[in-house]
Image (tube, rainbow, N blue to C red):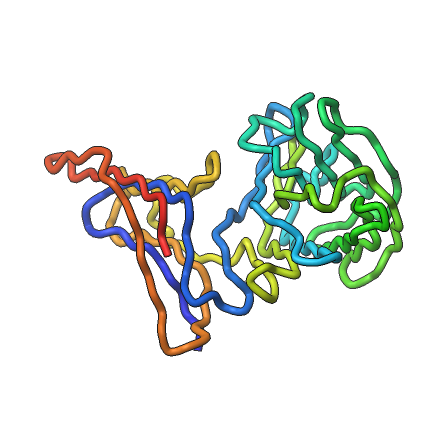
Length: 273
């Protein structure tokens, strides 16, 4: 049997910020919170990424795009960042981080330290048409660098065999990047192998439809805001399958403001497990 683990509101409206959400014991696929819509306007180089460190010498990244109303514009795609990335406004900066972008348009780019992206290879694989499933297979090279070995589009393999300057040991984040004028809907984004075992599935959630403002990620925090909703009972939940007869849920919050007359509570939660 599987179900969902959630943090549910009461009838009082509140907003909360979660920096970490965990469920114990970990399920085989290590479900993690994420987003469903990736939207890019301006500036260039918007991204959404999660902390991840390779658990071996191979890294598989899979994304399922259900629809792409805008069509592929610029260089959106799967991206890896070094541990020094941080919460930058954009990755289109001459900032002190490294990045590797495998774009949906079939090109591969590298972001050196203190420089902008440079093109490593074009036409490495055909541009997919939505709906599509794209899997990127990366391996550790003999010199400790990152190699883009294969890209699978809807099950068809394309050999890329590209040695990149990106250090394998320097990978600290994995995610999705958008360029201006892109709108696409992602139903699955998973990475394997996971330090937890199996696949880390970053997009696997359900949410109520009565939110006035849907939960969203900002600066590594999950923003939950139910103020102004037309009804109570808002929720967001992630698929979770118990692997034993014990399940522990724990959270730590402090109340930043409380206005009983306005029926508004403001919480900032730094740990939920």
